[in-house]
Length: 180
Image (cartoon, rainbow, N blue to C red; front, side):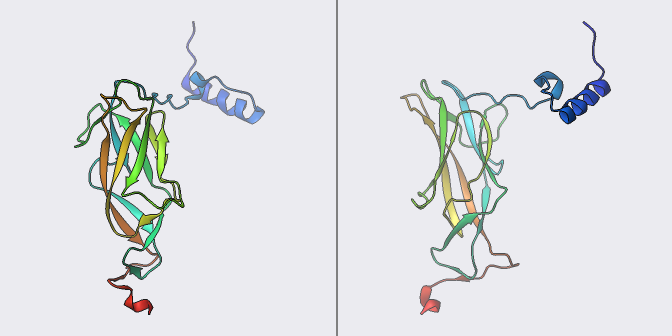
């Protein structure tokens, strides 16, 4: 079998794209398929590609008041990764039955917006901008194997919420007396 030069393959892909012809995945240089989540696998949770000391930017109108909430700024990620070489302090295990991992912010986000992301394969997903999160403070994101089993173990990532209000500083008001 003869080899195709990289230049020739690239030219063929461009021509095929212009003509609307389907190109075999091997020639197109497609992303490798993500590994599916299955039983008896170790994993870590990721928030913005971090397993520890993660932060989430939250869009909040200023000034920030006690217990004010907002939505995550677009472009952030949440994900799960199989454990290869990780400095994570929290490693989960899918147990004998799991085929998915559900990531949930705790304490729970508002019920008015989806509060969890379900993964059936390893990788990152966009952090939903519909979440209703605190403008400041911290929380834990739990990564729970589903369905569970006696051998399953959750992972977690501690996150700090950082208010973003469109200006250089988001002033914090410590009481609601300013609204009276």
